[in-house]
Figure (cartoon, rainbow, N blue to C red):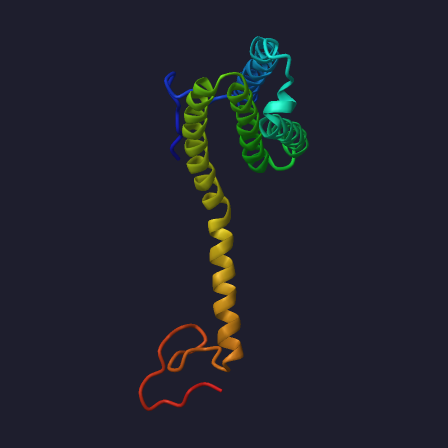
Length: 186
């Protein structure tokens, strides 16, 4: 009987340590995102204070979109926290939506403050969105490809039963072909 020995270079990663590192990373990301909102809010008077206007008067659509994306961020963050223990893969996908929505909120504030800077941040956000979209598509395929195969197989079986031909002609129940001249099994 052979025993498998692991050398010093093949150390197992402790899942709890990996989770703590991931949580610390996400905490930094959320903290950085929450840092930008008050920072950008302080720049609003620079643009609108001179004209004695309020952003809701001139950029109503951008501010409303900012509020909607912020609400989406909060709802998806709560959903991520609720889904994490039972459905970690789904929670990961929802968390990406959470981060993308908050990133879009920052882009909308940038558009409100300075349009060229808004376009620059929008290009960066679209690139991040494309990369996350591709990763989410791969995760989606990994999750649902086996389920899809089972559904297709079940549908084929049902179609075979409905058509009255559950077993292909010329084969026995075990899949062996019936010899020529022999009676098919009843």
